[in-house]
Image (cartoon, rainbow, N blue to C red; front, side, top):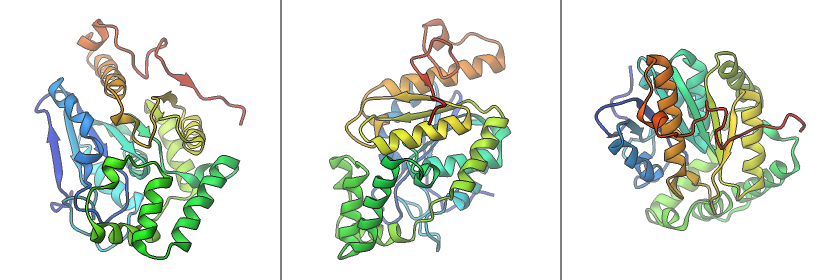
Length: 290
């Protein structure tokens, strides 16, 4: 049973169900799922049902008495899928979405991960090592929790308009939560991605091209999970908010999958929309030579 204290924003009343899982660290009551996916609200006006929870300790969901944990959050997200839904996860939310997909792959009609916060997945890559060292230095050597939060948001590329949400108290709580956040191990991530691959869950990994570490992590996740890659040029960590490209790609992918399930050509397909399933989609397979 899904925890009734988890706050859920819903956009759109009919159509295919899409569950959006946000990232970030606990502590900011102003920065829930609706703020992370503000551009995706438009999909609710295009014939899709968007389900946007605030993860425990984020936004309007109360503190759960534990740190951010992808597997613990993945358990209730897996229930939220119901009898089947399309699943999207951003940053740490990609870890949560992946954990949920591994728990109930048959309920995941497609999985989209945006700039997955999975630094332990590619510790053999120099760009990831350098990025990880920056984060570690910010975590360990910050003078205060507030300073830690501010350094972290700059390093990971949080847009300025989102950095300003909340006040000193929220920044302090986020800084404390960052030190306790539980990142999944390489073994866990690899196992979850292999489950997704074996279950033939359609996987798309999106990045913004602004940070070499997120590019390497996105490539690695897509390769292990048997997915495809899309770069939506962005100056920051939120490529889903930079233009309509993410929405159009997600809509076309959802439409193509739903059409296969029902055997009916959808509006997006009739209009020539591109999807993760299309042979001529503006996506690229992941290189196998690492």
